Length: 389
Length: 173
Image (tube, rainbow over the protein chains, first blue to last red):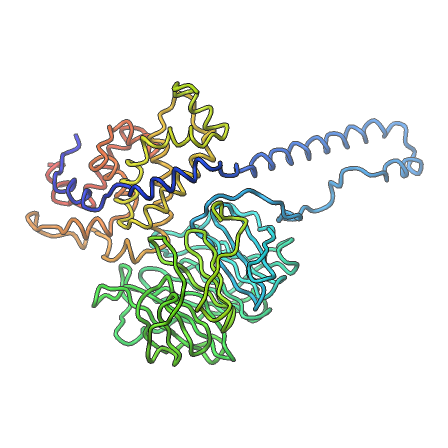
């Protein structure tokens, strides 16, 4: 017998809510518009397996029929004729990026690699796009084939070189989690999984960020310990770790009172990273910036940021933005309002990233916004992944 | 255009958005209430339900003919909520998980239910929400949890024990 519990019912009811008419209308409109692309990977895999099986059987039968008649030398021309290349290793990534119909993602990870090059990873459809003209045009690229795990992340340093991280499913409370890292050198036409060493199993692996071809960072965190930032100086093969210290007024503790680090950025030899977490004293989320001048071997507290973890972005070593409405130009000492025409109708916060002092991008619910004047004016170029774009 | 549910399902499977909307509308509110209760955040709940709706449509072919849509869709929503809760633990682990050592030592000690729900692991919050908030019959709870009815009852009991140690002791006694 399951006992009734009116108090529990009331507490659950207090958390609940009904969909707003606007949300229901938007969802209905998007459903009426078009069906999402079917997930055809299982079908493709089945076809490939069948084809390989058929080819294998065909070759075996062919060789068996040939054997009684062949006399060593005479057989070579026929055996040398084109047959299915069974001995050729198959790449783990699809060689040719194929277009696919995408449908209203709610999450797009943008990575501005250079002034002109920007990459977009859409976890919903496991799709990767590259633009070499600041989002004016997009080309779909391939991704490593992965199975399971938490949400992957990408990092590119130009139009060709990039990394893809697939964090493994974590143990309870992120006590431990594996990680796999792939690298591409040909603009995500193909990927090679790296043999990595030095990354501890402890903590959930989260954000990867490379600042050049060799130097990169991988953040890790859990609800009970201080966050870790692994660093590599050989393109991702070997890693060493450093721990973020507690900033003033923040004491890391069990049960979620810990920080999580974001993307590491490099400006003129100085590394900066933002980290946010629930403060056990104030019961509010606080946000901080840490800096490193020794390549990530040690990190020190740099500033406290007015909290808005979703919208914080580094523009330069000293100019940081909170969305498009607030900025600091003295590395967080003072903040002031910022005039911008950025707007979106989403009830959740946008994510902002800047390629340099002028070019930046924002995304929310799959939208793509671009600024080329440091955040004052924004436009919405069309994107291939957003149905309503 | 037929109103026969099986034909609507077939049209939806064939890519008819209006047909899928017809199927989805009756279960949208209950799916949203599940997401809200699990995530306690309207923006995140909207995202979860939207993703669930699209995934449900994409995978509609996996729904067996004659099977009810509601538990299947709720299972998809629950999966999305699980993923969303994993990504931001400071929303869900603001307070330490209730463990044996942290339970109130006296039965009459009042538990802050709201805080306890906030920190409750998904494996416990989901069965409680399905049973106590959405009022689903135990058979449907079992379908959403993809387990037997007995296992579903057990999971509800365990979730109760995690959030209401006093009540669990009363039931046990």
